[in-house]
Length: 103
Image (cartoon, rainbow, N blue to C red; front, side, top):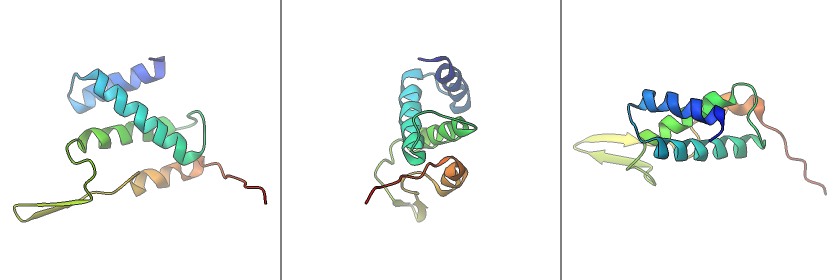
């Protein structure tokens, strides 16, 4: 693990109140890939690492509800946002690179 990832995973372990570093590390890697794909970049810049951590927390909390868009239990309805949440997308907009396609 590189130093940045180690520090992020250590903070996430405390924040999520878990000791499963392997799971949190995998979720972090998946979140990093999603952020880099969304922004069309190959490395994090600026505050993008904050959004990777936010996505990791969301992924950790969604465990067991993968693939669901909504659920109703005991009269309580829960809706899940699919993909990267809008709040995170708004924060990442300023880091996006445009793709130019030749004609």
